[in-house]
Length: 64
Image (cartoon, rainbow, N blue to C red; front, side):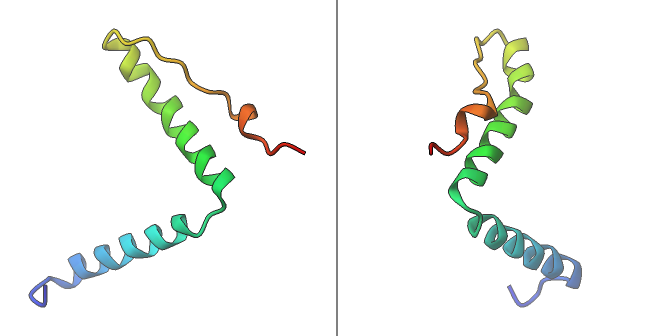
């Protein structure tokens, strides 16, 4: 991997930085991100004929 262009090296470094930042998030934030991705993908699945149930974000609040 020594023969990478500077741009590719910069992109790979940015990708690694993002991965570490996301890995450091608390679990509830990670679940919230998954739910947002689920909501984004739902219309695509629905147009393909799948029945989709998107969980509301409110259900992921910590129990006190």
